[in-house]
Image (cartoon, rainbow, N blue to C red; front, side):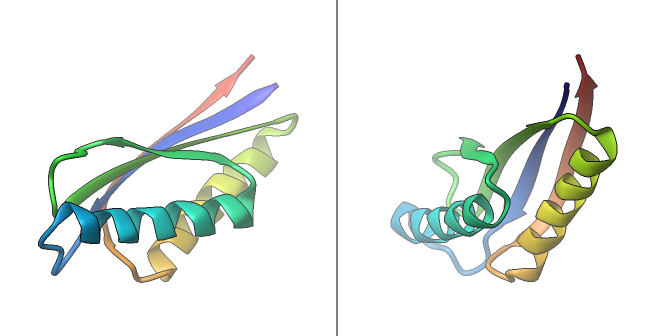
Length: 95
């Protein structure tokens, strides 16, 4: 069994309230969840208007498949254009 874990740090431009941040973060999470069937949640910087940390995890049998899906998830998050990715942390764990 292989699990891919990661945290993506986003910078939210022109976001002046938590309500505006919530709208962007919910949209990001919903689109990524629907496309990749991954567990995704906001995991940090909850009270900061212009920064969001989104964590994700995927589990499967093949390390190549999980690694590919993690890369595609990060690429899609960037291509959506809702926020700028400023950092990513990824870890692949073998059980």
